[in-house]
Length: 255
Ligand SMILES: [Zn+2]
Image (cartoon, rainbow, N blue to C red; front, side, top):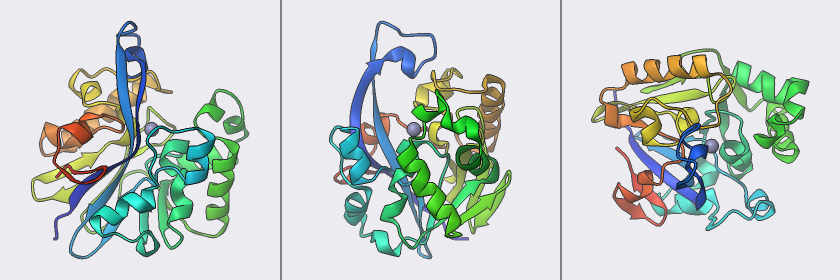
């Protein structure tokens, strides 16, 4: 089976906030930075995106610092947004999904429970959930759903050769991590199961956890599945940019 290369693409950042944002109930007095990413998996056979970033319109509305359109960034590794056929959505928070309109020919893979909550449950329309998914982005996703572009995943599932979606709730109702066959073994993009590498190393969550018991179980599960600890990647860590070789503006190769 072919191996994938994994690229981290930074579309905005850094943001600065209290350390307690990324290390729950700790580090109140320190400042911590985070970047916004999506990821690209490349093999000789196919190109897959993990998450979709944010559209130029929402980036303007939110005044995201140092924003570059995900479609533009991808040009750095010779990927045309119009030719993307597969986007795995790890969870339906705005910073991971608003950019789906940039990939008009892509099928989107999302956990059924995550889709049901964010698009069909009235609870998602109430604070504090609207912090995670604004109305405009929710409508974009609803359109995709109506167009039949969402492929619903239930639990752990191999969706493409060498690619497994792994249910990892805690940060969201049904976040899915992505286990990827690479030349170094199984790597896992955990998305916001952890914001930073430190969350995994210290087994301590960010402040943005809706189910702490589920989170601890998810961390145990992802750690048991990854071939080596350093192949488990977080969602927002600036180290994904600074610690790895930059091969094009905003793009580093993780594996
Ligand atoms: Zn996020």
